[in-house]
Image 1 (tube, rainbow, N blue to C red):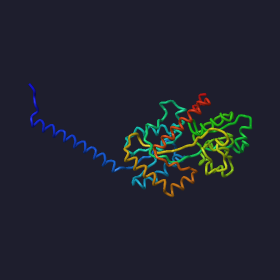
Image 2: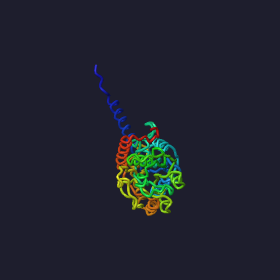
Image 3: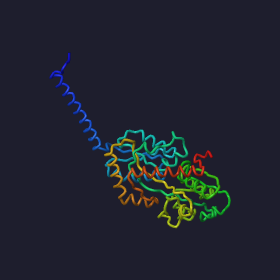
Image 4: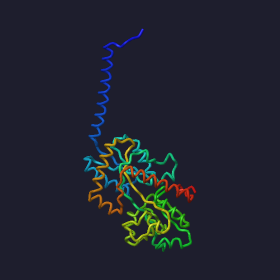
Length: 333
């Protein structure tokens, strides 16, 4: 025998559906309210490098400007290690609410994976990129005792040279190693922990050559204590207009350091838009423009989607170069 629902059961079911709908609407409204209230407190900006370096200084300049627009403190938290991989993976695992950000370097995404195991590498797809920040070009400098005044002097020397880099898996190491492979220059690679000790070694003639970020090298270049031979950007750097690019000299080595701000994957679009707007206001400020100029940084203030596209293209390019010349950035070859 068929059983038909009673009026009471129909009304009860309808009430239950209405209650579920109201609950769902309440959750959506609550989520929207939470987003509207963003930020709810301090926004931590983690840096995977030590205090005082280029990446740290950029983070602090950005944080100072963004905090004014967002109305909340943006403390910079330094957690150095593994070229920024440890800090980046830690932030990637945080709640995706916009309260935790990381200052991301392109070398970590495009070059470090060529030097470490897949488990140690950072994948850009595991993050939401908010905005690109700036371009920091590398310059090849010669020590005062080397006698080198141009890169032709290096190639004509017909001998092995000593050269310093800013570390394993960095743009410095990649640029210099690929350049020497293409130019048939042999030498001993001495990796340092950062640009400062590499530059110090060049100044003291402990190494004949070193590839360093321009902002760090410029004071010694201007003082005439080291000689700039090449820059590794696509075009001549406006802060060093008389120094040719590696490409002008006939070598296919377009390597620069780029930086961006990222959040954990799944951060609400409204939160990302608010952050992007705050960064845009910072970029327009005279204080931030002066900071870039003082530190020889070329603005690269592009949306996050463009950062992802460009960095993936660089990663493919660098991988192709390493494979073509049989280079091991980990030092195992």
